[in-house]
Structure formats: structure tokens, C-alpha cells
Amino acid sequence: MRRPFIAGNWKMHTDRVSAIALAEGIADQIADIAHIDLAVCPPYVYIDAVGRAVAGSKLGVGAQNMYHEAGGAYTGEVSATMLLDVGCKYVILGHSERRHILGETDAAVNRKVHAAHQAGLVPVVCVGELLEEREAGQTLQVIRTQFEGSLAGLSDHQMTKTVLAYEPVWAIGTGKVATPEQAQEVHADLRKMIAGQYNTQVAESVVIQYGGSVKPDNAAELLGQPDIDGALVGGASLKADSFLGIVAGVKA
Ligand code: PEP
Image (tube, rainbow, N blue to C red):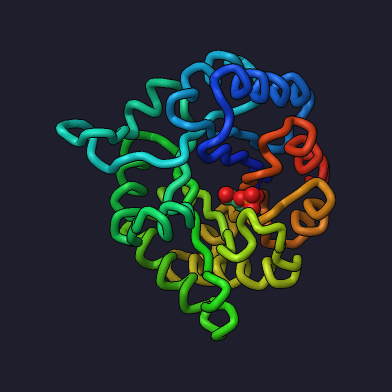
């Protein structure tokens, strides 16, 4: 049985005071929620403060990226153990903004996924096609290439402990949301890819989030699809009310 998982990706937003207030505003309202995993992913520099602010609550904390090396002369980078040290449980890897703005490749994402598992972090691995790729009928091929490249070499156990996020790039931060049918189709394809590479049992246990302009008013329909197990939320995660409105879209 897969547990729904809703995570907020705060990107390069908030400041110290607003990050703590936002996390506390969410944590205060979720004490009675037992059937959903919840997390926020602040910018690196606020993770520690946010983690302390929500310690003991049901709100988990994640990072938006990390480096694959365990330590050393890598100026500006942050390791998986450092993230664990400041209270992270999750790390988003291969977000489309990192792939398309910062040039991150599937091979780089794959190194990070392995390093995250080795350290004990749950990687949330993003895949998704560009608008021109969808319009050219290449969605499935793009997703397959990202899936195979980013997740190569994982054991069955590591795969079951990996969260996937299908985020069509054309729906991120644009207000254009994939229809529930479009999202479900790709989620089902992803689950088939997992079954093909691993087995049905592994495929049935992997949590696959949808991301791309999820809001309180479209969450229930998206999250009601059989293969959509949660949401990775950008813009709407920056206000406690809208994040909680999305959480409310998960069936009890
Ligand atoms: C994201 O950045 O992962 C995302 C889905 O953003 P938004 O919800 O703003 O589209």
C-alpha cells in the first residue's frame, strides 16, 4: 500500500523569518494527519532553522539538490551527510530547473541518487518532457531515457525507497496543468517501466508524485488517479493555506 506524499519545493524563495513562519504554519495544522507523508524543501541555508522549528511535528524536511561526493574540495557543494546532519529526510534530484537551466545530466542525477541512498536520504527524482517534446509525440521516449539514465543500477530495495516525480516541464510554474488523464497516462507508463526493469511488486510500491501547477482546486482530481500518489508543489507550497488545501485533496 503506497502512502500519499505531498512535498513543497520552495526553490529560491523565502527568507529566514518567512521560511520558519511558513513551516510552522503548516506543521501546526497537520497534527491529526496520519495517512499522508508531508515535507517542505527550503533553500539550503534555511534547512537547519526550518528543521528545528518543526522538530517533533509530522512535517518532514528535504533539500532541493546535493552533490554526489561524500566530502572534499568541491567549493559550493553540499553532501548527503550534511543534509542528514541538519535534519533532512528527502532530497529532490534532477528537477527540471537543474536539468534545463543548470545543465544537469541523467548521469549526474544518477550519481546523486546512489549517494543519497548510500547516506540514507530518500531521493525524489524528477522526470518530465518539454512542450516541444510532447508536441512531437516524444513524451514516452523522453521519460524512458530519463528513468533509465537517472535510476540506473539501483537494487530492488533502493528502487522501492525512491520517490519519482513526473513533472512535465511545460506545466511547471506556468499555470498550465496536465489533465488528470495526461498525468495518469505517464504515471502508468512509469510504473510499467519499473515493473519491466524490476518486478510488479517493486513497481506497485514506488510512490510517484505529479508536479506542475498543482493547486488546491485541481489537487483532488489529479490525486484521485490510480497511479498518482502525491504531489511535488512549487508555487502553491509558499503559502500554508494553499499547501494545506492541496493536502486536503488527498482522500482519507
Ligand atoms: C516544481 O517546481 O516542482 C513545481 C511543480 O512548480 P509549480 O507547482 O509552481 O508548477
